[in-house]
Image (tube, rainbow, N blue to C red; front, side, top):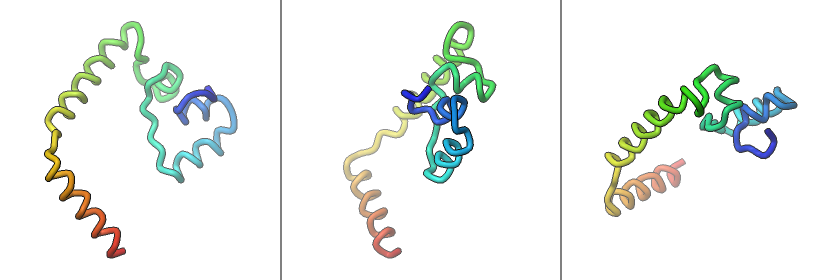
Length: 89
């Protein structure tokens, strides 16, 4: 559990309050890729009969990425805008 990037898995092992508080304060996101964290949150595990669900979910996400392809000009414009907004703060 400790050798994983999943804070949910780590929290289920030890120091639950500290692990969850640190994850909340730092804005961590758990991708729920492992068996343990999926069981903890009550989702189908990515194995056996739950594998089809996770395969469909993964395919759907990959389709979203295909639709989000941006040109270099679009990326540069977005970065410039973000930098300007940060400079104003």
